[in-house]
Image (cartoon, rainbow, N blue to C red; front, side, top):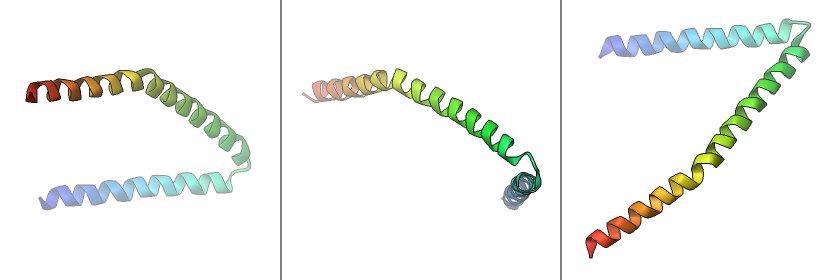
Length: 77
C-alpha cells in the first residue's frame, strides 16, 4: 500500500515539474505568441472533434436509456 502512495507522489511531482518547465519555457521564449496560437488551434480542433462525436452518439445514448427504462417498466408489470 505504501509503495502505491509513494509511486503516486513521485508521479505527481514529475508531472508538476514538467508542467512547470513548460510554463517557464512559454513565459521566457520570444515565440510564445506563435506557440500559443498553435496550441489554441489544436485545442479548437480537439474541441470540435469531441463535440461532433458527442452529437453523433447523443441520440443513440438517449434512445438506449429511454428504451431500457421502458423495458424495465414493462418487466415490473
